[in-house]
Length: 209
Image 1: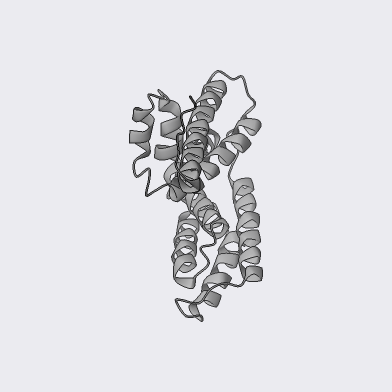
Image 2 (image 1 turned 135 degrees about the horizontal axis):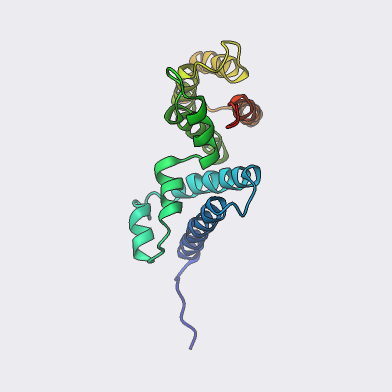
């Protein structure tokens, strides 16, 4: 006799999301171990890790009502993935980004601020993918991102991310809180965020610097 895990489409979608979350945590654990053992090149590790972190943030945000605690989810399914939990929940950035920031640390430049910038970039991009396009949803995300970028002394005043976020914040400030970005505006903002994020990653000193 076949046992059904779900009663309707909504329940099936929930279990599918659970399976995806489980897979992301397991994949991150394997990736972390491969990096520590020097099995995977740093550049490849960083790209894959950023993808997993971004997917994790989007999915955990979607599941926040059904999975309020990722730690509890991890323990419930006896996953034993401490490295993944540290990378996805505590750090939020690849180990390579932490190492670059630590190597360049001076004054207000620190791994914590770099991690904050990366997290704010990814949160803003993921929110747009989830169609969170109301001014009162987008404005605080861009303000947080702009604030974290301004904390980094290694970024010049005319850094692309700073100028673009300043332009968008000025544009949003003229709109009403309940106004929505048009599809074209949302696509352009996502493009500007992605472009600025790539410039930000390129601006970080290499570990050999």
